[in-house]
Amino acid sequence: MRIKACRKAHFNAAHRLYRKDWSDEKNAQVFGKCSNPKYHGHNYELIVSVIGEIDPETGFLIDLKILKDYIKSEVEDYMDHKNLNEEVAEFADLNPTAENIAVVIWNRLRNKIESKFDIEVTLYETPRNFVTYTGE
Image (cartoon, rainbow, N blue to C red; front, side):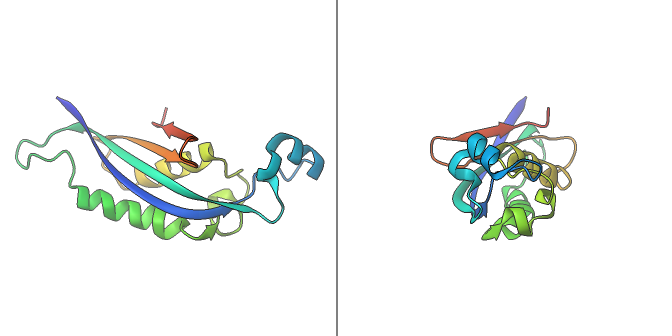
């Protein structure tokens, strides 16, 4: 029997959506206000889901305290109150869209969570705009 266990978290970060190889005019045309050279920020909401089989010995899928610690070290401590473009290595040459942020978070957590589990990352950039990445 497969089950999904989830943990919610949040972090605040600034970013600028732009491509270095495009003019300011083209960036503004494609990314609008989000390409502001002075950056802008979001209060990101994050849901990390772990999917797999319940351990018959413990009754847990995963100890949610362990998941909480992974989210803190790999996401909150790493991205909270940061300028993603300038302070997070993965975005040195990667546009920090919600889609790309979700993939980066998934990859960081994938390195910590046992491979027997599937994981899913849902990232809310605003209460109405969100993305989900499952590693596929």
